[in-house]
Image (cartoon, rainbow over all chains, first blue to last red; front, side, top):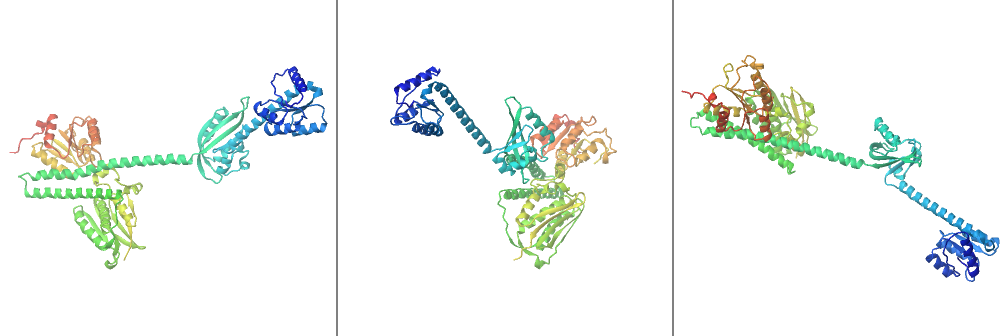
Length: 490
Length: 147
């Protein structure tokens, strides 16, 4: 209470008590005491006289506005002119009571406190609303609010930025426009059923932005309820999970690949151990026989031939494995030199003519450049090995008929070919056969043997030499393997 | 090979070197002078059930013993084993499985399918003889020594 007259103060206190309000009070006369009281006493209401010796009601209201505008302020004064009263009211006082009419004071205090309380509650509610609306507007998730029919009323900034639709473009439409034809009808109906029953729906949609970009979203849809329990709105909270989904997909692919590799390696080990054992068994078995003192000379010759041939077979398998591990370690290098492709063809032909004679297969070769133009820079060992691999396969898979190989000069490349009239390779296997450890059919590979590495090694070599390898084939009619290398002259 | 007479051992093996080693060792030990060799799984089934090129064979004359390689072209050894052990006409013929590996899964699968014994290549003939003895076949297969 800002009051300099003891008797007035007493009258005011008595009047308040009379009106049934229980209270404590502090009376101040100076500005200094007033400021202290605002801080220490922390009043629920300020009653202030207008004129005091060193202070006045106007100053009091201005300080209240500045420092404690949540505290109601009533001017309690002797008769003042209306203008002054208006000034004080304008400055923010809640009411004014004239000392001659003090009976009104109790009601005025109650009204002022209630008014302030209402204002306080409204400010609090406003502030809460502002926080909520900021939370939605600035949320890192896209948020849609629809009416009870599912028509969009509001979308937040994240939504408009991310989806590229403005609020105007989507307002009144259903969120289904984001999902043209991806989710099934059943899925939508199930979702609608869930949320209509006041439950939260949770799921993933493959949605589309305005520009058509597809992405995966994790969506939570909750109904918002009136006090009555009826649905007022739905809120959709959506999070982009494209990255996450891609990571999961990548992991699944990686896992499958790892498992496939593991399977191939196991199959390879199984296969290779058989392929190594077969010639080894022959070597061990026939070496034993050589000790037989009753052996006839032709038997002796026959056995040593088997031992020699098995040793060569074993050696070539081991060479394949060593080549593969060099490739796997990434240490395969090109040893480029001058070489003559005609000489290589002729050398390889000489090697194979002996091998196919007894099988009843005819072999021939063609070179399309004269010898003096057939010198190029490339890796002689690798080129020879690839041709040898392809011809070995041709021989292996051809029981009767003919094999032809050679090269053509085409667009500054040499295109080699090896054609056989063998069993052929089904179309769907054309890519797979170049994979490591691959052989078409397990029961068939037993018939033909081999490490299953030749084509994989050949492909790597040809790619190192700057070319590519491919094939055409017809099951039962035969196969042609092609590869090309650059026609590099000095 | 005489197919009309009683075959004592049917050898199912595709690798010519292994065939030669096995035959030689059998003969050397005076075991069975009537051995028939087939080179793949399909031929083996034709032999057992007198079909295909063996259509005029007397099906009731079953071999006394089968030596079966597991890794065969056309039809796998395990599959042969399954078929003959599930057919009343052939299921009582003792089968010795021959393989180049000690792969456990092969051994287990063979025994499951009803193989009587298992020998790992290269054939150890002491072990082979122990095996046929255990099967009670030794005296049955042992020939008179050539005069």
